[in-house]
Amino acid sequence: MRHLIIGSGPAGVIAAETLRKADPAAEITMLCGEGEPPYSRMAIPYLLRGNIEEAGTHLRKGADHYQRLRIELVQARAQSVDTASRTVSLGPGKSLPYDRLLIATGSRPSLERLPGIDLPGVRSCWTLDDARAILAKARPGTRIVQMGAGFVGCIIMEGLLSRGVDLTILVRSGYMVRRMMNPTASGLLRRWCEAKGVKILTHTQPQGITLEGGVLQVALPDGRTLPADIYLSAVGVDPNLEFLAGSGIELGQGVLVDAAMQSSMPGVYAAGDVAEATDCLTGKRQLNAIQPNAVDQGRIAALNMAGRPARFKGSLVFNVLTTLGLVSSSFGEWQGIPGGESTELLDEARYRYLNLQFDGDRLVGANSVGFSDHVGALRGLIEGRVRLGVWKQRLMEDPTQIMQAFLAAAYSVA
Image (cartoon, rainbow, N blue to C red; front, side, top):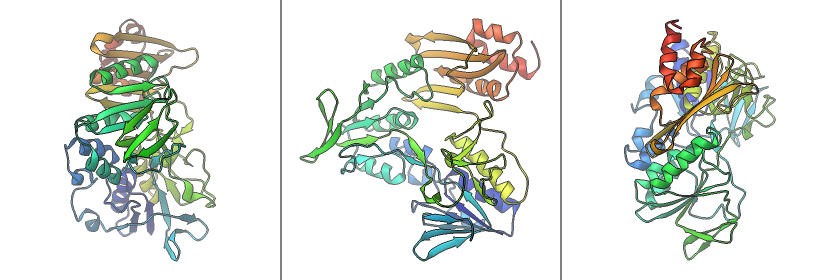
């Protein structure tokens, strides 16, 4: 059996290792599209801070790890997939055959449509190559203008500030991390960042970038111009799907998959940021670009590729974010549902906030800032669709009782 994995992030690596255990005699090939050893993008902020060297970003530390498992790494990008002939093209005259194919190509930074976006000094912070370029230039006083304050934009702040840079964040919408926080939680995060020396301009989107005398000039809507040594574009990510055009594989926002992580084409699977799978709360298919989800999907896809039936129980939308030392999180239907109830607690002086969303006596969503001890309990109650009984009213009155509610549910004590 020939297993081909396109992508070498967490989903691809876990899938390859799972395949080797489940199918000892199989041929396993993994395409690494960046010319790097398989690494974790989530480790890049630690690299920027100087906590680790480049080797610390590698998903597996042993130099011979893949060789020992007889997993062949090919440094190439997939150009197209021919599901009729079961081949993946790597470019003119180059292709690889497969019996089972896993698409684990992850995401790439969204492109701003902005004059000057291709100028030298304009970067994303997504790859090791991006990190190298930033590290080569970031020094005390280096002026960095960053567009975007989403998840990625917030986790790299600490690494940048640790190098003494002068950091200005531009936020197109009215608040930061709008895809995981309500306005109250976002407001706390903004004030926290500003207290740490970050300049944040909301309702601001650049009009264009020029290069004058070796310095980038970022034009703002109000007529001002911000000088920058580095312009960081961090406006979101999109799944890598373009090479699947004409393959016949059914696409939505990502590759549409079933509970076995199989696409509309028999023998073709998808996992990670690129897979549009079922949400465990809503039952709807959606992208959920978080590493725990990628790992779980990679494992399940691999088991099915090896002929060992396994089912994906559905993903839970959750994010845990640490920004300059402040922990925030969101879970499930954190925006609330029609007809649902909610409760919240706010302590602005201590940067603490907790918002709970209910559907009947089930907790279905939550936002928190500064309540890191509750993260596991929140996830357990929401993902488990636990009926709270009398604990629902207790939480409405005091949201901080979340751990007690979780323990009561775990031991069936009301």
